[in-house]
Image: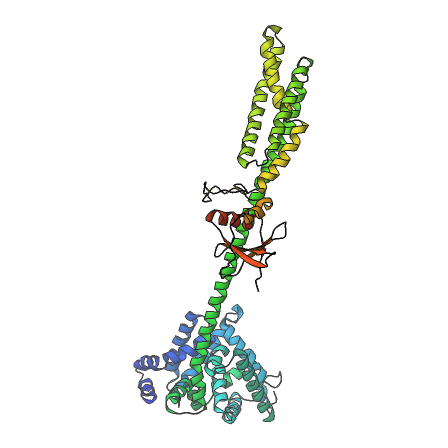
Length: 185
Length: 315
């Protein structure tokens, strides 16, 4: 079933919308959640929250891309799970990603005070558009889908260290870009 | 919070970029079969990477096998050392047994310091010295004889204990049984005096000789064969054994494994693998060869194991 039909089911409040969503995007969402959360029970709980959240948001929200919508939902809910369990220090994968992403921030000031979330996303989108296809894919696989450096190295047929170096160059590139765009944080 | 803001900003990435990243594997996989671009090269290298993985696995196997061989070698070496140490322990045990006989004999001698028995002790001493001399003349004493002597000594000790007590009882009553008393005194004195100073030297000499000799009861011994070196082998008669072999001026092919230089300077080259011995004839400056019988081969094998031989680096 295509995205448009699933959205129509949501609008009609047909529960088959969740069933079809699970069938089409279940593995996709599970992959993102499991890359961020290392506990399988939490991943399952996160997925259930995702379907409920989608049911509550559609309508009034009509997503342009259901895939991106579910991806964002899963990431947000995973972050909430992380926050809830942060004291336990259980999610090393997400901690690593967040640590690495902090390299992209030019200074230590609060982001929300100087730049809106949406503006920052637009800047990142522009920066991604300026990248080569392979670099863009690498960045998103790492920081959106949460894949490990090791698996990326395997896909790109290079060593783990080489991949880590490449990711560091990408982060420094984003930092320089945001700085040049006047993102003074 | 700053990290999470970036995290949330990344969540709002354009869907086309997400699709591009999500479908990267499948699109590249299709291009492998259909086109010959750079990605094709990357994906073609992928199987090679799996081969390197398998190679690493074989390296692991090789390393583990090498470690096993090393352990086995170490165990074999340790077993050899233990075998040698056991042989040394045997000699130590035999020496200690012979040495313990002397302190036991001393009190018995002191017990026998009665004035009545001095004449008999003189006779006994002469008999014991005669016995010891006869023992020393036997140049080839076996370990069995050593064991028998040690057993005799222990039996003698028991007898002494049994026999030294009765005289005290016999001395107390009247002298009616004097003939029997004398005989018992004689026997005790003769047994004890054999272990006095003259005896204390003998065990040390004989034991060292016995332990240094090799006895191979399982060697296929041919009684019709004449062995000028005897039935045991030692550094003294090893050259005699090699000399007694029948040599011919022709030599077979092979590489000698051990070299032995006799006291007279004759050089022997031993080929254990093909059971031959070469002898360098200095006069004619030729090599002579002799075949080893099973018996001599076993003797040489035992000699190498016990005494060792110089390994030969044959050019």
